[in-house]
Image (cartoon, rainbow, N blue to C red; front, side, top):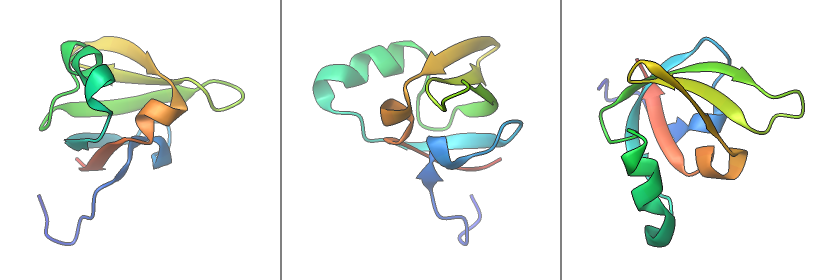
Length: 81
């Protein structure tokens, strides 16, 4: 990770952007579900698209497509890949 790369929310990326998960700030009671889907610290991801109203967000992670609600994506911090 480049020291000048400050982690930003996953929801702030544009379609086609690639990033690396740096921190998951999802509350403990919901974190297990996110981790089971493969969104672990250090995992590379790619933003595929946003739904017409911006929610949900479709991403490519570990070879499959995953949709997350915007409020969940706000809690996942990433840096550019």
